[in-house]
Amino acid sequence: QVQLVESGGGLVQAGGSLRLSCAAPGRTFSGYAMGWFRQAPGKEREFVAGISWNGGRTSYADSVKGRFTISGDNTKNAVHLQMNSLEAEDTAVYYCVIKMRSSDWERATHYDFWGQGTQVTVSS
View 1: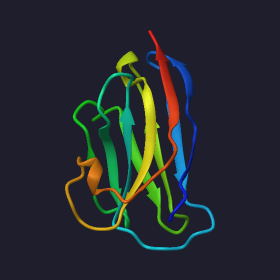
View 2: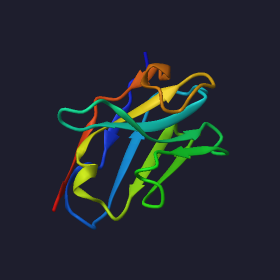
View 3: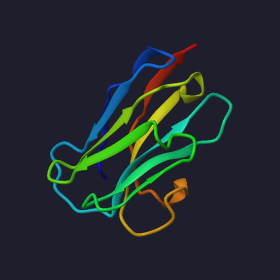
View 4: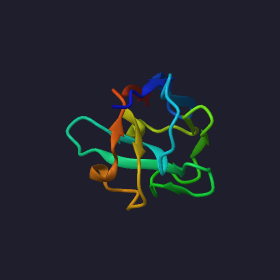
């Protein structure tokens, strides 16, 4: 089992920025990709962004393109999500994820490991 530790969530005003980070401390391994999902109250969990293990490929949900940027450091098993121009609709619990094989980015069931989640609240 891989433990993922997330940090960086919080409360921010609309138009502001936050940076989420996630790491798998104490572990060295190779997966296929890391990324982020989010879940807002009363809504299904949705894909936000993903990055391949070597950083060569990224994928974003249409709702965050141009505002969010994902980056990774596979030497530290770490991934970051820079979130700019935040909107009230971005309010959710954000989950760090890892998948171990090539598959659709958007399907939550394709991810093998999940963090506990960090709350992001954007006030309008």
